[in-house]
Image (cartoon, rainbow, N blue to C red; front, side, top):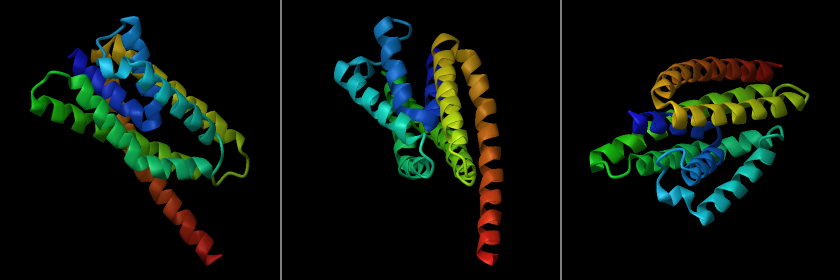
Length: 188
């Protein structure tokens, strides 16, 4: 159950900020807080994801650049989360590793969809402060869910289930609202 909770929490959080999650997992492994694959605790991996986190942290605060970044990461985050799920599944059978990758990548796609559509909606606002606030909140949620998955994986599974349903609903509603806004702008 611990592995399932870690896969779910890391997967969902990776849809918000893959590099932050990979860095947190590596740090937790180094500190002995969780049984994290050695690959994620290597110094070169931690430096790489740390640098990428800093780049994302800056890009995420700039209106429209954040949407471009999210568009690129529509592929990167789910694939990265799938790789994390595969690694976390560890020595499981090939089916177990494949399932870990599939679940983790799917959860990342769900949270990423909510993030990207929310950001696109926020970018319609003329002030930049909402982007900064939303980015900080997203990073905080990614940290919270990842740390919960490390500390109490069973609860993380329940929380991620609720968050995934909520993210799907948000994505559906905001995608529709953005489509209506575009149609109105074309008419005017």
